[in-house]
Amino acid sequence: MKATRSLLQRTLAAAAILTALLSGGTRTASPGGLPGPLDEVRAKIARLVDEKKAPSLSLAVVRNGEIIWEEAFGLADIEKKTGATPETLYPIASATKPFTATALMTLVERGLVDLDKPVNTYLGKAPLRRPGVDGVPFGKNDRIPSGGSGRQGPGGPHLRQGSLEKNRKGEMTRLTNLVASALIAACLASHGSAASPTSPSGPFGCTIVMAARDGLVLAGNNEDRNHPQTVVTFIPASGSYHGRVVFGYDDGYVQGGMNDQGLFIDGNALRPTGWRPEPGKPTFNGQVMMVVLATCATCEDVKTFFEKSNFPALSRARFPVADRSGASMVVEYGQGRVQFVKSDTWFQVATNFVISNVVDGGFPCWRYRAADEIMSGAKELSLGLIREVLEKTHQEGNSRTVYSNIYDLKRGTVHVYSLGNFEEVVAMDLAEELKKGQRRLDLPSLFKPRSQERGGRGPRGPDPK
Image (cartoon, rainbow, N blue to C red):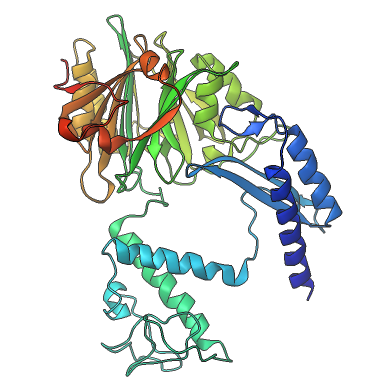
């Protein structure tokens, strides 16, 4: 009863807070497009959490598939006075079922799962056993159980809808969770997960190179993930916020971009870095790259930005940064602290490992080694050189390169390539694109044949040397 009351209190508080967030009032734009400066909203949230006696509440604001603000209020542990964070876990009971069902049916939609095949088809060397019958694997007619259905086939439960008869002991519900979770994990392990950037050579295995020489300042990146639904967004300057172009996916965070000051930022996903917050500093839980591009103009500005707060994002990512002066660095968490890693030569390469933890020069990434070899042997810097690096380090398969960019930070231009095809390019002039107003475009549409093209894009054609 106590747990039910606590959950009800949180639900009531959440409903009241959503009402407050959606109520009228004068608002100004913040770097990520969030109504701000948020002091009034935060005050309402704190008051409502107190009035409804909710121990804690964590919320996130999502726009266009991107989290633009997340924050927690109250205590995660009342007895220990432990504050809640956006990572605090809350029991949501049967609300997990829609997530499990959606994840499973997404795999079906992608052709990774056939509802009419036995469960163990997908579970490899870890087959499931019938409940209560040790040593007997599911038979060829067994299926994944549906919901709490008590209907079973010749060898066990079926995936497709069965009767609505309630199983009072809950065996079927528990089996549903076990089978569905195991199946999803097995399929994602085999085919690559868009939500699990744990392998340097797997999903999100991005390659970034920044260079300044011969009067040029260029930055290039390969964005690697088995998800070709990519987007580009143009956001004109507003108030004190810089104009910017950002690239990413239709279902997630901004992956990188450039602003009208000639500042570039991107990200490398990492295995857990062991990041820990520094006592006495506030925690920043917003979109790091979006805010950096909106408020910073130089690498020194970015360094100051990172020094002021704790950034949980550094627990699973690092951020390569370059500016139009030719300065570059990678912000990462290594050796127990936040590091601002700079290069001792005219270029800097970044892939998916913490370079400040490397002590013997044994760089654990073939893409890093390949890029470093090409750049080290180069006689001069050119767009063609950066393109060569991106082409040699692009990936195929389950974590394929879905788009590649080359930014000219002095000229404010970006050359875009799609799906590892470096023979065709879309060139964008940031100043000209920003004059057209804020808009978001599907990146693949820019590479359709001319007869199918829509407006709002840069020129296509062979890439300049």
